[in-house]
Image (cartoon, rainbow, N blue to C red; front, side, top):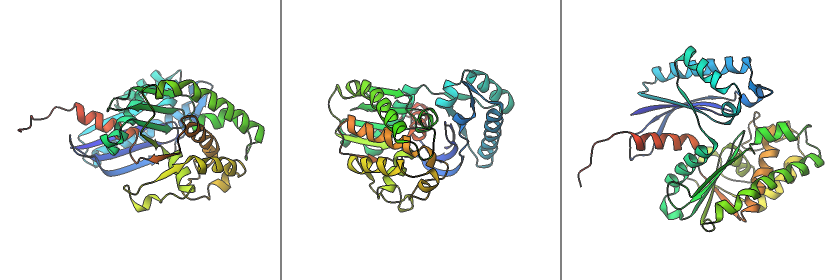
Amino acid sequence: MRLGVLDIGSNTVHFLVVDAHRGARPLPAYSHKTELRLAEHMEGDRLSEPGITQLTAFVEEALQLAEDKGVEDFMAFATSAVREAVNGDEVLRRLKTDTGADITVLAGGDEARLTFLAVRRWFGWSSGNLLALDIGGGSLEMACGVDEEPDAAISVPLGAGRLTREWLTADPPPADEVRALRRHVRAQIARHVGDLVRYGRPDHAVATSKTFRQLARIAGAAPSSEGLYVQRVLSREDLAELVVKLTGLTAAERARLPGVSEGRAAQLVAGAVVADATLDLFDLGEVELCPWALREGVILRRLDNMPGRAQEI
């Protein structure tokens, strides 16, 4: 079956086409995305008209692409930017009226659980007690457990884009602002560490998301061109050094570092502060990068819930 998945994130809006069936890994067939940065289109706590207009145009484009690519099943979901906008429900109604698309808004806990599912499927049961970490534009998702359903799944408003807008005012950011951000981030994460490790320390700590991938690439991890199956890790020692390095650079200078996109360079300092705090507070020496994340979790859950023929044994 050919599935089309529209992911409306705080930074990027991504339409992905995959060939998949239950029991098999989804194979990407087509990808189209843009850094729409919906979180920057907020006027107070409302998504602005220009933001809605741009989102509507992308949804229409995605639906046309789905038809062109022979998609049989189309699903769309939105995360923190739409979830937290006071006019989020109105935006979804307008999108339904204007484009015909039904868009589901995921709760933060559901983001954490679905990301955990993708990580569990990628690494398998041999990973034991698994900790999955994901830094998005609006929130940080953390989940831990020994099964496909995590024992604990938590979302906190510590996304790299959100923190950059709310805490950092200059480029490069002043040292006192970085210290204040560091205190805030660590206090927020520390509240939840006990809930996530109460069933035991993780046997395997895994990170997903563009922020972690960029930090790992700067620290020397293999580029994406070497494929999905190359092991990539990010150590706490490297992260501590990166926080110091990145805070002394402008966004333009960060964009010239390996693996860093121009659109994400401005929020990389905040992302590094969150990543560093997470590894430190969970007492992790390193995290392994996983190429699968929320989108793949959504796809896998959809495939799991599809009716299928009983198999002979």
